[in-house]
Image 1 (spheres, rainbow, N blue to C red):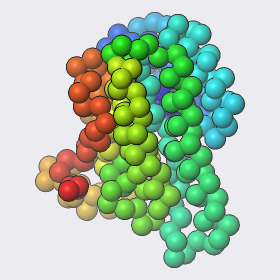
Image 2: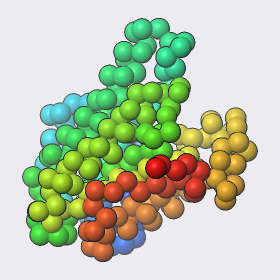
Image 3: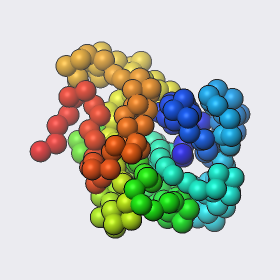
Image 4: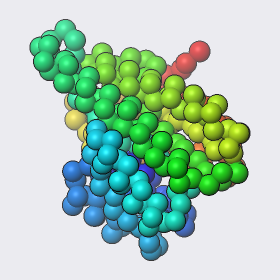
Length: 242
C-alpha cells in the first residue's frame, strides 16, 4: 500500500497485517518512519517499498519488486497523497503552478501508475481488490487547497472508471472519502479550530486513523465485491452528497 509511513496509511498497514496479510509498506522519503511501521506489524514477511510517486519508472520498479517478493499482489491501497496550501487569492503564479504539478503528479497520476503496474500482478477471478483513499474535500471543495480537492475528485472518478473496466475480471474497485481524521497531517488544523471541526459532525468528534483502516479492510475483503464502483463517505454525517 502506498503512503504507509504514517497516519492513515500506517493504520491500514497494521490492520491488514493483523488480519494475516503480508504488507508492503511504501514510502517516498521517510525511510525511518516506514521502518518503524514495518517493525510494528503483526506477523512475518512484510517488506519496505520505496518509490517517488512522481516518477513513473520508480513506481514500476517498486511494484515489480513487491510482486517478485510476494508472488502476486492481491490488494492495492492507493493512500499516498500531498496536501500543500495554495489559496488562489493569495499565492504567486509560480507557487500556484508548483502546487498543481505536485498534487496531480502524486495524488492522481501517481496513483494511476501504481494501479496499472499492480494490475499486471493481480489474480483474476474475484479475489483482487483496489481501494483508493479519496477525501470529503473532493465534493465539498477545498478553498485553501483546490488542487487537493480536484485530484481527490479525480481519484474517485478514476476508481469508478476502472471499476467498469475490471469488473469482468472479478476485480472490485472502491474509494473511501474521509473527512478530518486524527492524524499528524490534520494536527495543525485540529489545534487551531478543533471545536469547530469536531462540531461539523453530530458525533462531535473526528475519527481515529484506525477507524478508517477498518473500513478499508472491509472494502478489500471478499465480501465487498458488490460495492465495486462506490465512493464510501466516511465523515460522521458531517457532509452529504446528493
